[in-house]
Length: 221
Image (cartoon, rainbow, N blue to C red):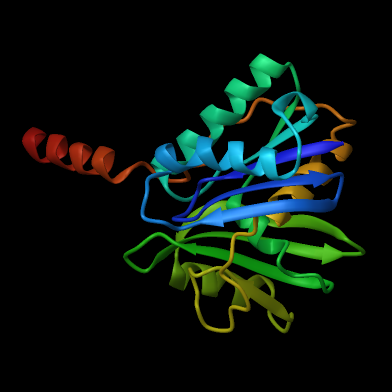
């Protein structure tokens, strides 16, 4: 099964092609261009370098966030368009789960992504025998609340930190498009080889929308 993975949730624009769980090739760019400028040329490039075309792809996987609001929309829209035109399934994976796949030893994994003002996107996973189980689902929280939760519910547990939301003890902040593909393949198999409707995982409203709500609130006072 050939899998095309697209990750536009961060400043990196990443694509990867897998054959089941074997990496064929990945390309990740941070060249100052917008994802809307970079993504399609990057997909064309990786297909050519792998001697493939879109008709050879059997499964599409997209990072659905949280992360860059604009980037997430671009990635998901591209995957949906390909899925519709090629009549193939697609799978969505959260950025926090992709980060968790940076860890390969059994135990608890705390995935966090910085979302400014001492807040972070957060999820907690348990890796056991190759399976990643969600213990705390993705949410947006203050760093202090995340640490309080971990200290109260998971006291004396060995926790590995990944992501840049809580930098202390974090082993990796890297969103790997290969790991996105592995997570997508695993989810596809667990779904009995069925795709799904993919939706963005924002977890909080865009800044412009929050600012507008604040202005409207002040006008109403």
